[in-house]
Image 1 (tube, rainbow, N blue to C red):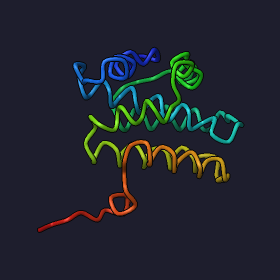
Image 2 (cartoon, rainbow, N blue to C red; image 1 turned 60 degrees about the vertical axis):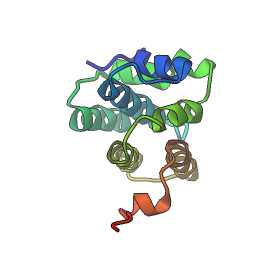
Image 3 (cartoon, one colour; image 1 turned 30 degrees about the horizontal axis):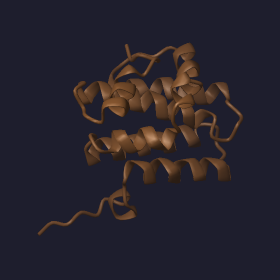
Image 4 (cartoon, one colour; image 1 turned 180 degrees about the horizontal axis):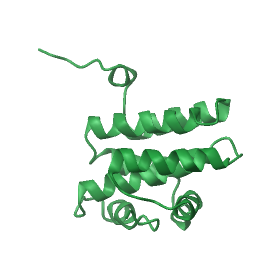
Length: 145
């Protein structure tokens, strides 16, 4: 089960090197980011929490409880730095496939309540920028020389 304490991300952020498993970092990043996505429009809906739970299972293979999602969304981790700073650190160790998977998951959570707000769009753009994913990469364009 993924730790809602987000310990692998915190260690990466504090040390600057990925001594932890990249898989653990990715799994915690998925939980952290999707949990925060639920509050991007300031109105957390139960359907969004259920979407996060389903998408975390599909993306990471890990189970996560609704209470762990709520804990991750309001983690004390964010008292020491903003989400975009954590994602900037994580973006240095995740591969492009993992980053795109995370961004696709964010879109799925945003669409789960069948409406998209400007705050959610701003949130998505922040996540993409923080991870260092370009618009070309988002669209599947890569140099094939």
